[in-house]
Amino acid sequence: MEYRINKKTGDKISVLGMGSGGVASNGFKAGVELLQNAIGAGINYFDLAAAEGAAFPIFGEALKSVRKEVLYQIHFGADYDTGYRETAGEQPDSSLVTYSVGDYGKTMDPERIKRSIDWQLRTLGTDYIDYGFIHCVDAVSGWEEYLASGIYDLILDYKRQGIVRHVGLSSHTPPVAQRVLDDADVDMLMFSINPAYDYHYGDKYGAGTTEERSALYQRCERDGIGISVMKPYAAGLLLDARKSFFGRALTTTQCIQYELDTPGVLTVLPGLSLAEELRDLLHYLDAAPEEKDYSFIRELKPEQAQGRCVYCNHCAPCPAGINVGIVNKYYDLALLGDEMAKEHYNGLDHHAGECLTCMHCDESCPFGVAQCERMQKIAAYFGV
Ligand code: SF4
Ligand code: SF4
Image 1 (cartoon, rainbow, N blue to C red):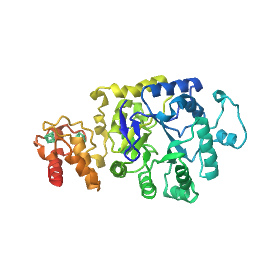
Image 2: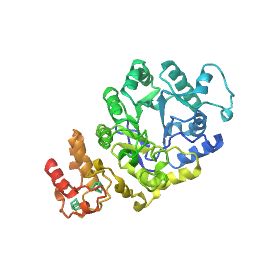
Image 3: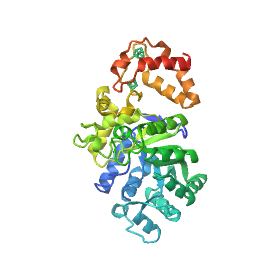
Image 4: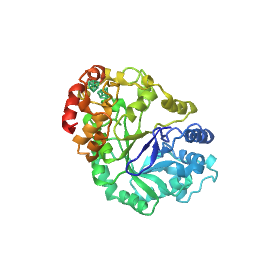
């Protein structure tokens, strides 16, 4: 497994994580086995905004012996009917195996949220939340309601009590996410990222222009806010040639590489239900570079993406030894006011000023970046 560090919290997070959608779809035993195999492969990061409450007892059973080694994202605003009723006194079957719980629903009622969080913790067999999430804010009015109803204060209160360790935010909408990041001290953003959404071939979860989305990722990278990726395959559409926005299917490995190349991203969280899906996810770790190459998406990139470096390093190797992607990333971050970017740039082995103007990167860049010219600009900007 590969791990990345959340700069704000110091948590070591597996680049491959898991959502909870699908975990319960083949029953309790199969779900437990799936999660235990994921843990065995080094996965340590799990999102608990489940499609159905039945996922919780499965997570509780599978991860109870390794609770301290895993990290949970738990959402303040996600609710599961029967869990709520059970907390209110309607005790269901005491056997977790046959425990019947309801579907996911969203609530802004703080009392109901408290009961739901209490039920989720008890069912998971834990007394703390690694990342307590501001749940699914996609409108400024929704964020204002979240604040006014005291739910954000509730998260902070739980943090003071040590029940919540860090604060997260889930959103699909860049300007709204930016507003929440202005108002709240967020340590992790869960955002819907994939090549279709970034290049405006997405569905309703791919909100925002390419520039707005890119600015959000850059901000997270600059401020050390980690990103966990939801919808990494655009709900499976990218994996199906008949439905793919790019006219042909991408593999899960290509999607994951694209997302892990995105600034700020720490981990990708697909929902899994089958052992084969887990094997396919883990294949990313052993895949050859050509299997990870997603450059064919250039065929359908929109005008606004033309000429923008996405740090993918498809132009490597550079004969001068320059890491073209990372040099561009530090340059963009410095322009955005990241004070550490210059220091990181200076610490590289090779700098833009060493460019031999060989034009190799211009010729091989699938995104049409005039990189040779850009190297001169970067060298002048940093003075090296
Ligand atoms: S110049 Fe092109 S190929 Fe090279 S890192 Fe940037 S986007 Fe990727
Ligand atoms: S143009 Fe410069 S940065 Fe690009 S491959 Fe050639 S030497 Fe490297």
